[in-house]
Image 1: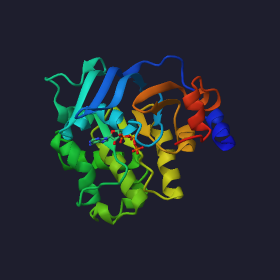
Image 2 (image 1 turned 180 degrees about the horizontal axis):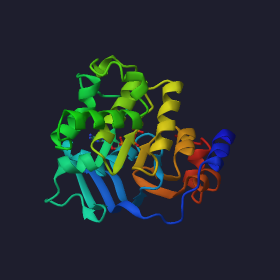
Image 3 (image 1 turned 120 degrees about the vertical axis):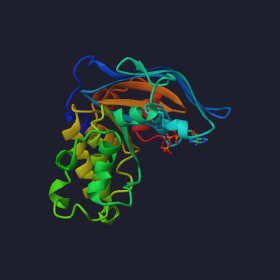
Image 4 (image 1 turned 90 degrees about the horizontal axis):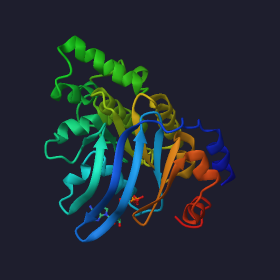
Length: 269
Ligand SMILES: Nc1ncnc2c1ncn2[C@@H]1O[C@H](COP(=O)(O)OP(=O)(O)OP(=O)(O)O)[C@@H](O)[C@H]1O
């Protein structure tokens, strides 16, 4: 744990009360009769990387998925409460879910590029959202997105190769480029490094640092060192409850709640 604490204290500190990009108020999530998330309220800002931590099954992924309505794809899932993106209720019947998921992009645990070329993986979103006016414009979007995802130099000479032929870490950066290509406001990452080796993991963590501020980033991680390294705000979940949410350095060095302390000191998890 010493390692965690040292890293946490050297992480950049969050500015005071940054404006919220997304707000959740009184959010509960049910799978059938089972309540997986109980009355969670949280703000997510653009300036900070926000980490969701907590033991397996505590509801981190469930709550993350409420932020871009990915739970809509699970028939038994039901969401109560209010979630706003820039003041707009994302569960309103007028909300276009395809647009919402472009504004709030997602990167999954297992890299999931389309079985298409590297170029097409990135171009697909801008094409369906009508963001490019022609081939030259699309080329610019693809290059910019791959550059922002730290992948351009590795793939610029083989853009027509299949995305699935890349290494796992490269595939994950391709998925990040794909999310970036539609110019999202928020990027949700659900354990984005859990299938990667330490070197590929370090590259994704570096990338998260670089993307911080341009996009609001929310990351679910099992790895407390990772939360301490990449985030400025940390939310600790336990049994569907949000136990504590605050500056990452505070959560790791001076948690207010006993349950948080027990978790970060490895007493359970
Ligand atoms: N599709 C689903 N149908 C029914 N129950 C589900 C579904 N997905 C998750 N759950 C349940 O909801 C609770 C929260 O699960 P969730 O996956 O959100 O937790 P988590 O903290 O992300 O866990 P992990 O760290 O293991 O991924 C668990 O009890 C889980 O079994």
